[in-house]
Amino acid sequence: MHAERVTDRTELYTIGQLARRTGLAVRTIRFWSDLGLLPTTTRSAGGYRLYDAPAVARLDLLRTLRGLGIGLDAARRILDRQESVADVAGAHVRALDAEIRTLRLRRAVLRSVARRGSTTEELRIMTELARLSAEERQRIIDDFVAEVFAGVPADAPGGGLAGAMRALPPALPDEPTDAEVDAWVELAGLVADPAFRERVREMALAGAAGDSGAELPPTALEQAREALAAGVAPESPEAAAVLAHLVDPALPGRERAALADRLATFTDRRVERYWQLVGVLNRQPPFPPSVPAGEWLIAALRAPR
Image 1: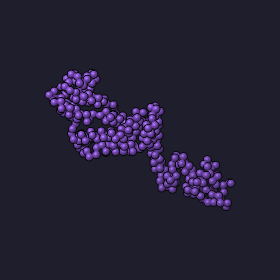
Image 2: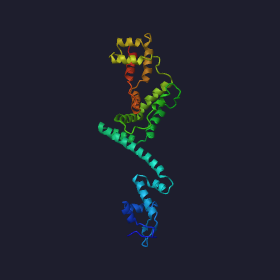
Image 3: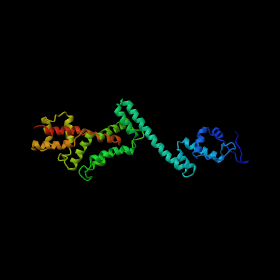
């Protein structure tokens, strides 16, 4: 059908003509028209929908907006001038940015799965983490810390650890490394483990009571680390000589054992691993582990003399 004329200056177009002009499918134009996004200007004698030049311009804008991925509701607000194109475009950019971050994270997860040959359970955990927003990932840690430190005043000895244990980055980087993805998976497994939660709570309560074995000199761990590196056995005379610099040699065995027990409360490889994982996620330099030296010191204190 040829374009019909209402007046000498007003040219009208059928849906078929609009489809040929824009490259859009007839059914798409009809669907948009049914939704009221492209109001019909008039109808022909045969009942065909006809559209004028302003309607054509509206269709061009609608096609552009849809090509950018903007939803029909947002497109309607722009077409009806309830919102500016700039406002909607800005919101759409933010949405695309979030989608891009999600896709990059999923790519990193899949890359890690392919590299590690992950088990089905690891894949499930990694996929779930990839779907979580930064807020949801933080909530996992917040819930863990809230349970562990329940009833422990923030100003109690060791109470400040609660804040430190929450110190995760607001979001994973756009291009997370394999180590960062692996750290998230391992961290999520740790905080979900009831035994780990119970162990950290034991530390929190003991720390709040001020029972930390702080009577040892600040150099105790460093000296224990040196003895461990030198291959000194905890029960050996050489270990006794090291202890003589750290603990009163006249301290009864019962009190030495009690000191060892207090130190053991705050010595745990999994808890230290938690801090290492938080460091990876915050892109902090790795720190030398202290637990092996602490375990050596505990064993030396418990050894019969």
